[in-house]
Length: 131
Image (cartoon, rainbow, N blue to C red; front, side, top):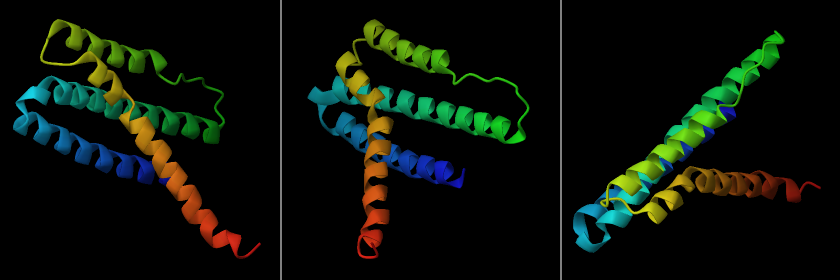
């Protein structure tokens, strides 16, 4: 479980750095404001969804360890509704670009995938010489 917390902390830091870069682009490049705003909106929603999923995974793990037999869902509907709210914001307000928001929705997943690949190669690098 500590691995999940550490991964979430690292991904959150990467997302905050990306958000800072997007906000700088938004402030300094007037032509890119809708795109930067869409990326910010999508990344924030992606980060919220990742936090929700992490909390659900911890709850499911706790229930499995306690062996209570109680059922819990993964919260897919709430995470899908968050993406739908972001889409509605982009459609309603022209200050946000829809395609950029959709791209931002995948930021945390891509950062997690990249972090997993790097972690895999980092741990297996030391094991290659021992086999």
